[in-house]
Length: 116
Image (tube, rainbow, N blue to C red):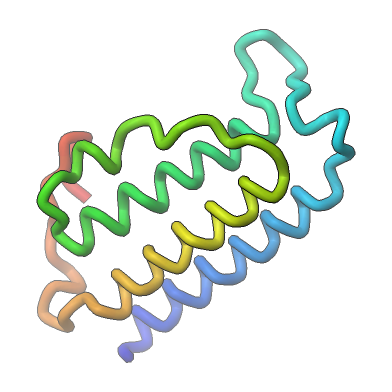
């Protein structure tokens, strides 16, 4: 695996582990608390990351329907659901990066949200 891919995979792995560690330190009664009506709570923030992981994994894998991955992945319900889904989507993203052919590492990929 190229240094570029290794660095990306390592960054995703470390960020996922750190986020799960941080989520583990949020008290149960604060998982759905937010400081303002327009602010996301901890589970919503993790849900956004889950959706992003799924979207980018799909885009990199050139899935048939990128728009489905870009949509709402559903509400995250509880710490275990957040952890399980975060791990699963991070694994999918890391696998998509590992499988990316060398000649596509610098390619621009069109998505419904713009080029990446």
